[in-house]
Image 1 (cartoon, rainbow, N blue to C red):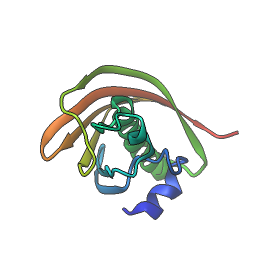
Image 2: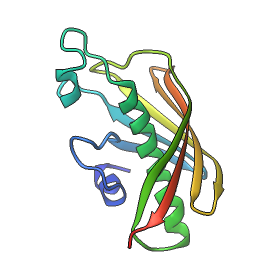
Image 3: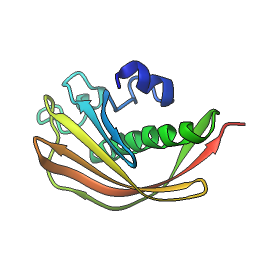
Length: 144
């Protein structure tokens, strides 16, 4: 799925949209891509002489990929307009810096869904090496 499909499901927009392409959806799993470029606004201050993508934005990219997966699953059941609210980030680990020029692969798996609360596991990797992993929990509600 390309950027037009992503924009139709996620409410995020530039400069905060952190998913460029959905590569694969397989049931409760999703694989997406974030192309990390030197033009990203956060590289101006983090860190100008040694640019590194902030860990919190890597987690946000995983969360956005998870939101896309959730919206895809919801659309199978209902139609409506939804919002995702982050509830928890657990067991986050950062293993490798992400730098301009990297293709950040975002892999999300739905672990559990109970009503409108979703728990997912995410792994962000570069060239097959894990850069970040975390468990994410979110509440999804229909817009009023």
